[in-house]
Every structure is written in structure tokens, then in C-alpha cells.
Image (cartoon, rainbow, N blue to C red):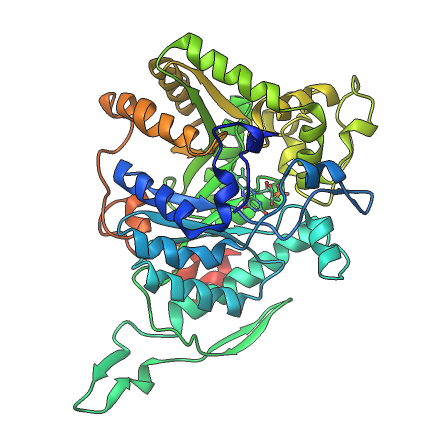
Length: 448
Ligand SMILES: Cc1cc2nc3c(=O)[nH]c(=O)nc-3n(C[C@H](O)[C@H](O)[C@H](O)COP(=O)(O)O)c2cc1C
């Protein structure tokens, strides 16, 4: 919920309207447009952090709006819910920052207010160094943040799935029973980070548990996704690396007793298109003219804490990070990824932004590329990201979607009423029985 798109300097594009991000009309206008086009959901990314290096704010990030500023997107969801009736809304919340009891109550409320259209993108948080500074804390090590995320989600799942029985809410005015005390239960949780003994104060919502998304494909992130996620956002880029990550998460999910198709994999991607190939290439050039190696380096620092400009540009990318590891793994040979030089990493981020995949060309051509990418990786779809608002979305809806629909690659209409049904089909409003959140305590203990 900030200005600009996923590549550097796009807020400076003369047609970009994202500076209006602090007005409700900006978002409700986009949401209605997406709903009219039949898109599954609108995604609002989030982080408390901002780009820093060596314990200092990067001036260029402030000057050129690189992952900064960013308002709180959860607050916006009700406005979007009021302006739409079918579109899903997915919002990021970090398990490192918010307590699970707060998250469970907030998402249960939002599931009611959206009538079952809310999704939670569970993250341990990008830009952890600055986020920890803001909260006056030491940065928690990477894998420990994921251990804390597990504890958080397990507690939230107990509140959503077990605190209220389905028929607990009676609304019996004559009998004087609003809710049946015998069917509302305090949950117990004794975890390494969180403890709880209490009730969810919100009755069961259409989905009970919000649709669970996860983003972050470090080794620990993949295991977390395999256990809890119903949909995973992945960075694009090298198709073999993306394919290896998807295959690995699917394999682990099956190991946890889930179906092979229990998770929908959505790859971050951008479509730069126009009615003719020449016009599309001209727009791509305009995009590249706005984006510099310096603002790419600041964006990379936001995700990883690594200072690319201080490294040997012609040497290989090296160095471990306790911040986001996916953006390092993509360039250091992990899981089928190519080994890149520091200059190549910078240039990749300058051209493609953090999520790596940009399809450029006239509509038939970009759909050819997208179709080939899906076939090669096993992905289920794309998380479409903007370069220019609303231009990127207009082009997607007016030029790309009709070609996809003509080829049978995109749905014609919404399925079901809830966000879970949009992704998994009508009738699938709640967590499936194979999900860890639906298992009994002894079953859970045997699994994890
Ligand atoms: C498409 C996409 C969207 C993401 N959205 C967010 C977000 O909103 N907030 C966030 O902190 N991290 C987000 N991430 C994840 C971070 O990039 C980062 O990978 C993660 O927070 C750290 O986990 P890791 O070490 O497993 O990579 C997103 C990733 C992708 C691919």
C-alpha cells in the first residue's frame, strides 16, 4: 500500500497514479475493475521494514520511493469489501510482529466482513533488520523466525477451527440463547513462543480459517509452506529453479499427508504488452529508462540486507543472510538456480524487479511466453504485479485476459462465493480434512 510498482522509479512514470495510495477511491476503483474482469483476488503486500544497510536508512530509498513509504493495508480491506461482492482480498501479516491471538481475531472479523473472501499471506517478514530496529529489538535469526511462525499459525488454527462448533451460534431470541455455552470452547496452546488458554471472541466465519498463503522459498520457508499453505507466492526468474521449488514443496506436502494438488503455486510476474510488438518493446524501454542499478541495489537490500554495490561486481554473489534467503538462493546455485555474478543480480533486479519474471510483447506473444512458463514449471497461475498503475492492469485486462480466455487458459467467471472456492472450486469453502488445522492433536503430533 505504497507508491510505485515492482521495478525502480516507476512512480516517476507520467501516467502512474499510485501516488493516490492513501485514498480509499484509488483502491475501490481498482478493486471494482478487477472484479468486473473476474480476477480471483487483489493482493496487498506489507512490511514494517524499509531499506537499510549497515544500520542506516538508505537515502535513495526515501528519495526514490523504494519499498517506502508503506501504509497499513489491513485497514483498507473493509473499504474494498464494501465496494465489491466477489473479488477476494489477500493481505500480508507478519508472524514476527503480530501476536497470533490478534491475527486470528482480525482475520476472523475480516472473513465475516468480506463474506468469506479474505486470505492471509503469512510471512516472517521482509526487511527484518529495519523492522527489528523500529521495534527496538534484536533481529531474530532466520530459521527461528520460521519456528515462531509455526507456533503462531498453530495457535491461530486452534482458535479458528476448534473454539466454536458449527451450530454454537443460536440467535434464539425467544429462548434467550445467543450462543450455546456447551458448544463454545476455550483452546489450550503451550508452544515455544506463544501460550494461550481462551476463546476466539468471533463466531465462525464463512471460511473459518482465511485462505492461507505463504511467500518465501528458503529451505525453512518451503517446509513451512508444505505444512500450512494453501497457496504459495514464488518469485519467478529461472524456470528450472521455480520448477524445482514447486516440486520440492509438493513432495513435502504429500509427506505431510496432503494431496499433491493441495497447494496452488502463483508466480510473481509482470506483463508489459501493447497492441503491437513495437509498442510493447517501446514501453519496456520506457520502464528500463526509469530503473537504475542503484535503486535495484536498494530494493535488494530491503529483502536481503546485502550491499551489492560494495561487492566485486564481476564476482559471484556470495554471503549468507539472516534476512530473506529466497532472493539469494535464486542466484547462488540452490535448487537448480544458475550461479550469477553480482552485476547480473543487479541487472536482473533493475530489469525485472524482485520477482523476476517479465513477459514482453504483443498479446499473443506474451500469452505464448506465460503458457510455456507454466508448462515448464508446474505453476498454477500468476500473481500479476504492476509496473505502472493502472496501465499494467488495464493492459492485462483488456489485452492479455481475452487471449488467455480464448485459449482456455483463464476462467470465464468466479467459482463459488468464497476465496477458497475461487481457487479450489465451488463447495470448497473451508480447510480440507487433510490440512493440519483440521487434524486432532494426536494426529498433529504424529505429523510434525
Ligand atoms: C510474490 C511475492 C510476494 C511477497 N510478499 C511479501 C510481503 O508482502 N511481505 C513480506 O514480508 N514478504 C513477502 N514476500 C516474501 C519475501 O520476499 C521473503 O522471501 C520472505 O519474507 C523471507 O523468507 P525467505 O527467507 O524464506 O525468503 C513475497 C514474496 C513473493 C515471491
